[in-house]
Image (cartoon, rainbow, N blue to C red; front, side, top):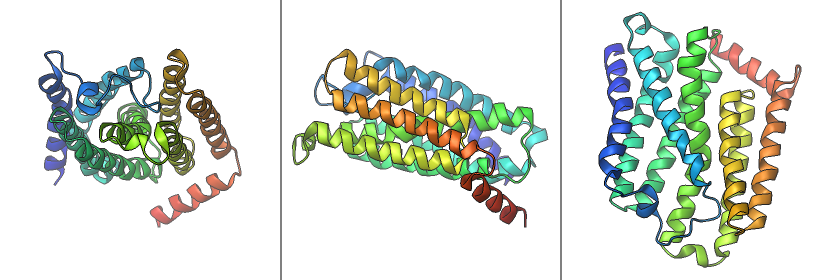
Length: 265
């Protein structure tokens, strides 16, 4: 199945920017598809933060080329994560189509599926029993890490947009209440993944990029100071989780070592 895994990743990684071009050219944007008003939900990062998709696409394509090389066909790590990454690439293109068609709640289902696929790949990657080569770190670890880092926050921003689009954001908790709740869930998930990955730096930096952009979005428009403060606090918590998980002798390190030994056995 190596040839199939390699072919799927190569084709599906290339399909993401191609789908973006055809779905959102001619002035149509993702924001117009997902939001029913001109105001983003408070949990949505500032516009500049979405430029990270350029890096995600480029890194994913570099990963796809690397894993397609004949010398990598029997790479055990790529065998363990290859079908999960291919699924994430396919689901990302599907998400773009669903967003273009304004099928808002289906985009929520799809982006959670992207998170699940990347989660499988990321945890298998960060707990691989063999040390990573220099090429593996830059062409496998980095692409997967930044992708899931962005999706960790994007999945809740997408949900907030769906709530706003359907009018639910004004019910019960109100827009600010929903934003705080979803942001807390994003922070909890980010801390969990940070600890599980033993403080993966690429992942943490990407989550911080998103959280700081949420702070910027709320401060620049003077919309929701509570969301800005919470996003800033969560950024500090994620940094603390990374530092703690990297400390020699920490419980996270012992747990990771135990898991690694089980995988070797």
